[in-house]
Image 1 (cartoon, one colour):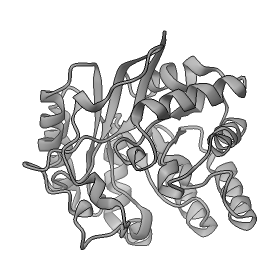
Image 2 (cartoon, rainbow, N blue to C red):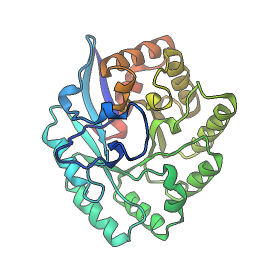
Image 3 (cartoon, rainbow, N blue to C red):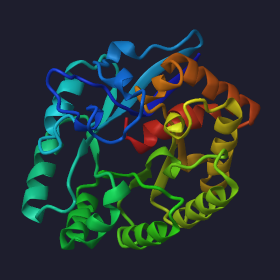
Length: 287
């Protein structure tokens, strides 16, 4: 039996949550996004024979960005397995407001970190005078920061590197390997590799391999294998986790089929399965 600890998934409760990004008139404008506009609960997380889900980290999904603890409360209420949670914050708000949010979130026993998606807001966030102060609060609170941005943008990589090198004690986890894969066109692939190598110089930064379906709904086993191999070659076996990004992965295949594919490619690549699908996630997310 192979145990899976999934370090990046989302559950949806449409009756109580907002999920603005899921609405048809909001980005991302995917033609198949409507398939995600339904409830997804813990009961949807089933694996095939030979694999066992032993826990998961729930990453905020826009349930209520100003009161992210409400999402954590709901996720905790239906968990049948050990879980950890990552809430939503706004790094640009005043330190007083930020610390109030951290205080409320930290009352939840599963809470281990927070996310403020950089993506298109990167320059706005990095130019805010509050960002440094609020990241310092995160560092002092010993919480994880989930980092999400496009690593193929090397100017942005330099900005992010220079930001987080100021916080050597802050644990940072890069989401979705920085939106790159082995299937990128050559020029983009070279930039992605250069960006990852730069970020690997931050000793406190870990990487989650996931989100392949966002780059290509028809991604292949070869792409999955080569991408994980590349990330491990740059960051080492102890700083990399494989995750699902459920339910978005269901735009390409079932949750069960994805994890079966992951195990197959790790076996083919002679990579340490237990570390990459279980132990690293358990250590980094403090199970």
